[in-house]
Image (cartoon, rainbow, N blue to C red):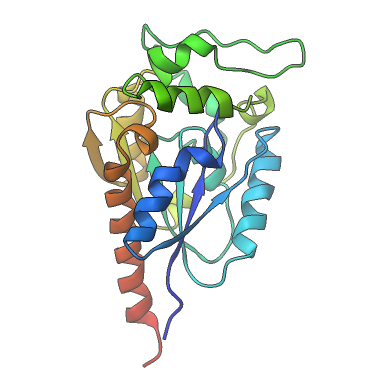
Length: 237
């Protein structure tokens, strides 16, 4: 009997694992175990190493889900137990590309904040940008949590080219956020098509894991069901 599927959730910039809390609860209700990968957001290599450490602790097949920047991190994973990827309005650089390259493909949304490193060389999201661009569909309470939990990201996460991405080797799903003001929808559509991903598209903001978790949960469940079927088909009788 094959081991059941575990979902590993990778957070994006200006967030931590708590950003997935509603998705974790929804997956649990569906009988699916999930864990978050704590990314330090210090360099791309550090983030990939942190993800690999999380994956190494899991027995059995994994569906790896990423939000935003973390798409570059999960695409760099090499653990053999990763059987599928879910990109939640996430960035998916190809071989030799950086996150910054992908972001530069399309002019930014007018509401997108201007981002510059602080004196310590870290990039913080301005407080007002949470409500205007990052999570404009969020409640006052949700915005307060997002602001309080934000973690800065280093430019070293955004400017390092990736190697061969994992999405070329395993099935992928892509949730396009039609009201995203951080990652242009044209960029999302381009990435999803280039990945040959299974696409779902909804009128949600940049953080549907917070503001529209049912959409995210349903997408992840589809990936889990597919992996379960594949595992049963290849498991010895």
